[in-house]
Length: 303
Ligand SMILES: *[C@@H]1O[C@H](CO)[C@@H](O)[C@H](O)[C@H]1NC(C)=O
Ligand SMILES: *[C@@H]1O[C@H](CO)[C@@H](O)[C@H](O)[C@H]1NC(C)=O
Image 1 (cartoon, rainbow, N blue to C red):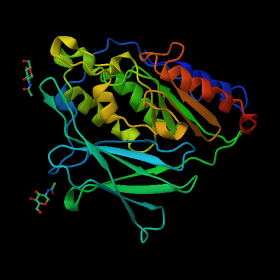
Image 2: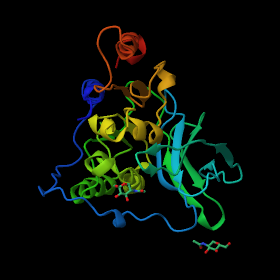
Image 3: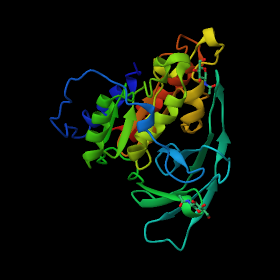
């Protein structure tokens, strides 16, 4: 289960202060959850093609974006080229921070995270990854400036996994043009359900969500399925795959851990917490939340 505070605060702001409302009556068919075979999540074609592309907010207020992707064979190119719609003569480049990890007998590809900042609000941007004939192009729209009554529509998903039911959920979300960003409230890939936490399932999940997550930010929260704590195979570092793959702008809200942080986006003030990290009195998470809450009720956030 993901932690639900993120949802609570969103509701507080969208329902309490603005006009919320549901966007569809759709209910997914009840079906047994059968995993989609690994082969049905193919890599994009071309040597070292960038894959598993996803974006998230990259600063406190929505003018920054973290663009993340994996190059499976070589570390380079480790750069993203981006430009504002209509200004293809003014292309910018940002280099990524690149990481990789081992988990039991799995070795990840090169995982890239590039933070681009000071974008204009409410503006369409294009970005490109890869080189020559294996270049891939994507786009996103920045949110409007933060304010109490700014309309904005979030989708909320949790416990997604990679079953045929997961695909129905994601396809349904993508088919509705209203959603502008996703609040992922935890339990992403369910790779931990496989023998030895088969981390290839983290890669397949990254490919699975790309059709949405490369084009609009997914706001990340860790659930228990992100722990990947497995002493029986000598994996002792909680959240190892998750933290290598999903970066968040936690420093912007003075947090000391990617597992808890806050962002503002349009009219929402989103607080992400981790119920699988210590939160008792005097813990880092507790102290952070204590200094965070007064900001939430500060004068700037009354509707
Ligand atoms: C890209 O170009 C190289 C030669 O420059 C070629 O060997 C390769 O097959 C091409 N790949 C694709 C996906 O077109
Ligand atoms: C990892 O170990 C499992 C179980 O022994 C095996 O089935 C799998 O092929 C191994 N994978 C690699 C990449 O060595």
